[in-house]
Length: 59
Image (cartoon, rainbow, N blue to C red):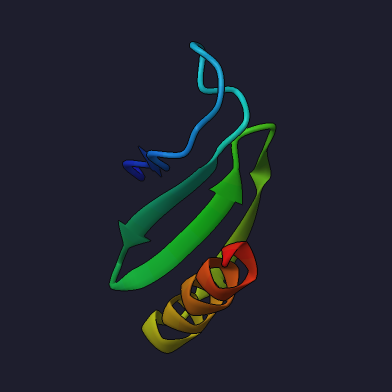
């Protein structure tokens, strides 16, 4: 079974609007909580690049 971890930036008390991350069989997986069947497999470098870009866009 995949253990998903919700983002600390989840909104609302029920955490319905969030991105979730999991490690499964040495793969990084991302999904959006409102579309849990749509799972994106990413590399560590790809996830790092995404996070850097999102952080830069917030500045």
